[in-house]
Amino acid sequence: MLLSVMSNRVDGIVREMTSTLLRASRSAVIASARDMSCAIVTGDNELLASAESLPVHIFGSHLQTISMQQLHPDLAEGDAFLHNDPYMGNTHPADHTILIPVFFDGEHMFTVCSKAHQADTGNATPTTYAPYAKDVYEEGGLIFPCVRVQRNFTMVEDIVRMCRRRIRVPDQWYGDFLAAIGSCRVGERRLIEFCKKYGKDKVKTFIKQWLDYSERRATQAIKQLPRATIKHTGAHDPIPGLPQGIPINCTIDIDPDEGQIVIDLRDNIDCVPNGFNVCEACSINNSIAGVMNCLDPDIPRSGGIFRRVKVLLRDGGVIGRTTFPFSASIATTNVGDRLVNLTQSAMAQLGDGYGLAEGGVGMGAGWAVVSGKDFRHNGEPYINQIFVGGNGGPASPTSDGWLTYGIPVAAGLIYRDSIELLEVKHPLHMKSMRIQPGTSAPGKFRGAPGAELIYGPKKDTMTVAIPCDGQEFPPKGVNGGHDSPGARTFKVNLDGSEERLPGVTQIDLVPGEWLRGIDNSGGGYGHPFDRDPDRVLYDVAEKWETIERARDIYGVDVREDKSSQLGFAIDYPATTARRAALMGHAHD
Image (cartoon, rainbow, N blue to C red; front, side, top):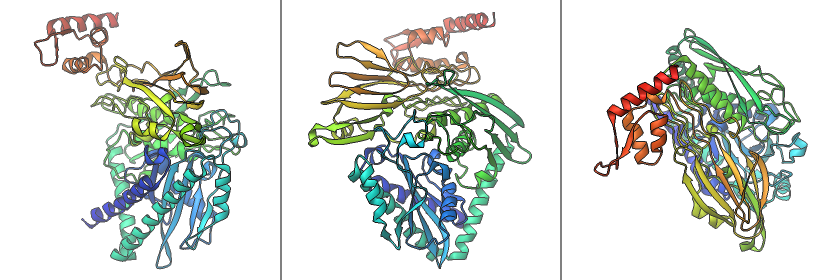
């Protein structure tokens, strides 16, 4: 009972840290979209608690605290560190992490971590994603390899001045910086209160027991899986210099007797001369997240998992430990999203009832970084990533995909921007946003559909940077489920004509021009002929699906029927005959 009480208390501390960061920050990417995470790591560098933080952010938190201890053997109460170095345990340079060691009775008991994606980090171009930067120098952003920003609770103003000089929106950044420090100081105070209440010895016992409990739960879940060695491949869309895309390979060894899973990512190409490299933290957290998506969701997300799920990496791989000075600018998304999809869909090879389909990938038009001059505020610069994308979630063995899924690395935890607030904060107009009927990937359980959105500048030129994936190689279904139809991005010109844009692109829009984006759906799970006809009927009535696709893909004869409560009805004899005919044709 006490173990449960204490574990909920530390989770509560993480949630209070999260609430502080969310409410005190200034940029929309944090305050509105919640692209941030908080965690507590033990003094000996094991992830203890993360509550509802993003998997892409927190599974590698212990790597950052390791580098903090290696670089600063003189850790002391009152210290705070800024760490965004992807070569030393961070995710990518846009994720600024504040680390604060927590001392009790002179002993380093915990480290509290607040990580937040920044609206701007001083990149050479106005975006925190630099997909085509051939190295970190061309990327241009500020990188802080675990630099002390407070000593004895006093700010190191040299670092603050450096950031204010280089970042395009210095006041906004400084507000977010203070919010992250405040978040960590709240966590520090609450953990000291926690230690005072229970005493150091009982807290240490709790830490050991909680991590052991997490390990036992992971072990039990793995022991229920079949023994298997799964090899699986995928790829990111083609990009300049890589016309076949970025291939991704993984091998998953499941040993139920030992209760262990080993994910081998060493068979991947070398680092590429652009920002698509996936650093150590993202290689670990995205592959483990994909596996954990397929196990008991109640397993505590703590360091105990890492004892049972191992990840093998190599130095210098596009997935692995990125070699300096290769850029890892978009390590958290793109290839990282593909890695989540690859590992979770690999688990579907175990058979029906296992794994997941692939979720919608690619930060398309609805995830773009927009920037320019704001005519409403004396031409002051603005820059922010918007979060109104509509990627659909993957189908599972038991349910349809999640409509507001987002992207695989975020696990549905990032908030969607309010359209009204988005238009208040930035000089843009959102013309329309709608679900696209008939874009769900069919299956026994279908992927969630993609969405279309159209927006443009109110006045003056607006720069839009889009790191979209999933246009050439859309998310895949599993076990007979269909693939997504894929994403598309278009520029709508002044005369109303449209031109198709590359997936990863940066363009300038003048007033009267629009950006139209269509996001990916998630992949389907299982064969469409196995879908309950009543589910197909409901999908047609709710306009998720069309009558034509119900007939041609699902083999369900749905007809309009005004006497029915749904306005549609199924002709069951015709459905039985149609499915039999379609299945016979498929076998032929």
